[in-house]
Length: 162
Picture 1 (spheres, rainbow, N blue to C red):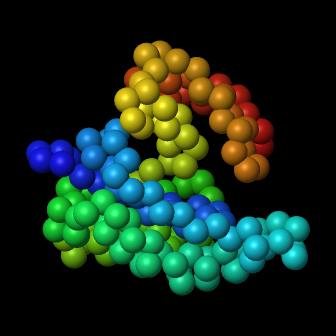
Picture 2: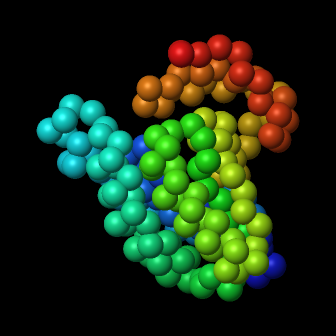
């Protein structure tokens, strides 16, 4: 995509590892995901140590796949982002440290992402943009939250589960 701003997004907050390439913050060029459902099934829930180790084993493979599927290389990236909160600390560190390394090596900005707020931005992908202000209800894993979105990066937490 000529003249587009290209970003690599990494996610590892719980039990799925993901690497995505996005153009201009709206167009998904690739999205690679590895689920850990089978690894945790016998424990009837996510085991943090197992989750973080599995992220470590798959993050580089997913980054390579995401870049290849988007038809770009590291030199084409304008920024890198990663989930920084909330989540399992050991799991969060995998994508965040990978993003920091890419940021440093490529001399590009690192954007730390709030996992819950990111859900509110999902409709913006592929041009399905709600008008500000809007209310957003998040029901994800162990989190339920209601936000009032006043504008970009201006989210007000209204209520939710503890």
